[in-house]
Image (tube, rainbow over all chains, first blue to last red; front, side, top):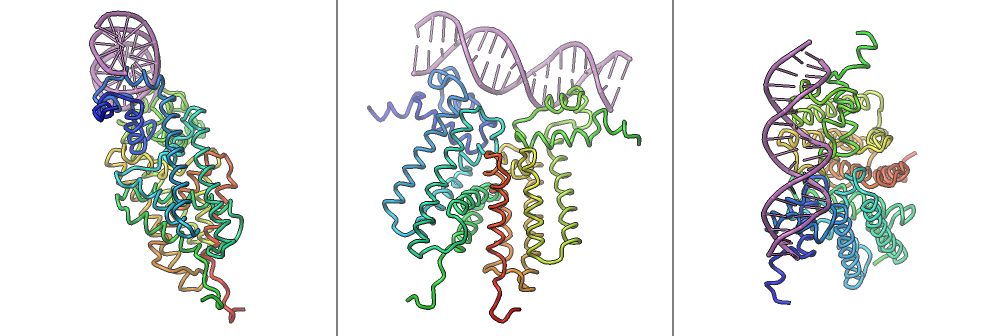
Length: 201
Length: 201
DNA sequence: GTCTATAGGCAGATAGAC
DNA sequence: GTCTATCTGCCTATAGAC
């Protein structure tokens, strides 16, 4: 496939790219086929050829987002060894969306949850469940290794972390200040760092 | 004013009640004048008489929400003495919206921020600023009295608390499980409780 | 204050030519 | 695959009668 083939027309991938950005920016109820079509320089029916309904487009959007996120979590598992560093890398993953004024796709859809078609709802929940499971594993391992200290179940803390990071994005974005997110995330993770025992070196 | 006067017709107050619930449920871009009119048993033009534009209705919505919230914070100041209890009461205030599947009005609007008219944006930010200021005061007082222990500035921690609670609402709501929010909020506040010093009784 | 009637625009979606 | 043309429905908003 030549490069030009990938830079014109409305391939499914390009539609998803544009729609994803628009949803992260304005929400599922705040963007339209017309917006996407204008951005890609095509007409609305072209989009319907690739995604027959807005619900189908929305579901494809979340599914692709989830797969990409899962790949990035796997990359962290490969490249980063200790639990505290993995948590930091995870927080950075979240914070990256703030470049370009975006919200986490699924955080945005969580706000609009009540208006979403059932298919999209299930996929949004699957995103959060996956995040919670991965974080739970990191927390368990960190506690075992003594690099993290916390009380209660890893599962509950994983949920607390996901929600705190989503909330940090949500409230930092209107201020257009990435530092707001970073300071909040850093403070959050700092409370989990295991304090040195008197006997530690 | 007789009771019947307050239970029929589309007074500004009743419009705000219905619209507020709808926005907390579905978002500003997810509700319409038709929804409100149907709920109150009136026609759409009746609503335009009270609120000429949707932006005007939206702004009135946030302003009323802010005033009510400020009153409740003042009530906490009056009725609750120590800082940890004040924080707990604050978290309960937030959690109350989950009854009825609602989101915090301003948390919802923060998600839709990019699509809001300028007037509404300013009012949403004022809500968060007010929360941050109140929480900052509670944190400062708690640290002074020795009932709270934390590192860093009260302002940064206040921001972290607001965002964590908003995020807890955002992610708990799709699961229709109020316990999810409560556990997260409780864990959050527990990390701030001052540990007893060896010399304390 | 609330109504009927209606304007003007945009939404998601389809038919059918090329 | 992408287009033109079009449908139906809902949106916010206004005019003007009562």
